Image (cartoon, rainbow, N blue to C red; front, top):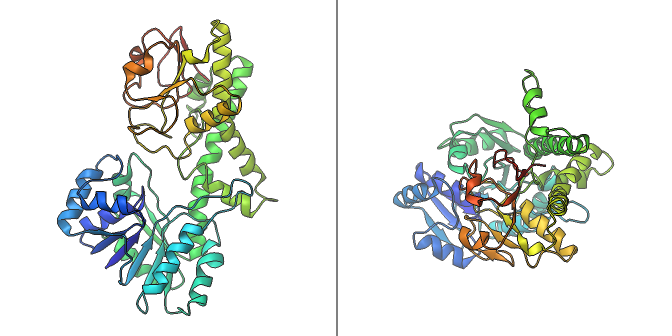
Length: 405
């Protein structure tokens, strides 16, 4: 039996996928309300294909509990935040989960950490727990997740996976568990390499996004159309520039690269600059909005609305979203309180000024900042009528009242 610890955006789909492919699974989370919702037959967030997968897992006999189980394999999938001051990982959730596992795990059990961590985290924070508990029998494994909200079910099935283990035979045994559903290649390596590869993957993406964002700023100063520059440059067979945007959100790209900066502050200079560029984009959008307001003689901030709260299109995940970053920046300038905010995917009240219908959102506003290209509005700017559009995502087409980065 496998006990999946942490039933959030990563742990729940993983548990459901394993269960639906013949693995005996119990999902555990300390949040009793979340567990109760799952036991009532309801999922806890929106994701394409998740409800169908949930039904399959229930038929296969998956169980949900607030209690850790006595079993042979544990998969820890809990958040790994970082300290915003020194940029180092905060392993408190991983440490807490692993401590509890060690209290009940039978002899020879396998402890898999699936949470994304910085290189050497397991050596520094998890391995000592085994020593303190006198549990040298426990087998440590790191299997970093590789999925993204909005496409989780597909990517769980098709993405390649990495398994890091002290003992290659243990690594192969864990690989077989993931192979029950994973159709991609599963690489078995050592733990530190597995830790590093996941962080490097997200750092690579962050750096490339930063290049496109910096290019947008350069083109704005130089009076050029960045989209046209990228379109033509990408015709070169060895060039693939990404599209710029209003910032970077989610729990991976804006967070994981900081682990390297925090652990290697004297070396990770290029990475630090890239992250700072991405972090500057929400405020850059705010400044661009101000320029457009001045151009049109608009001085009342209540005439401006923000469309989109999530960190990417067609998901309900708001973690580290550029919109939240921009709202925080505006609050520091004492100018966010009267702005209306709307996101069709966020049904709960996340921020002040939030409304829950497009009609209410559009009433009495003259400028819309389009922060997320949800399918509701993508290539359909007519939904906003004749309002001025700030379009950092480049999803509203061209028009006299459409302003790009």
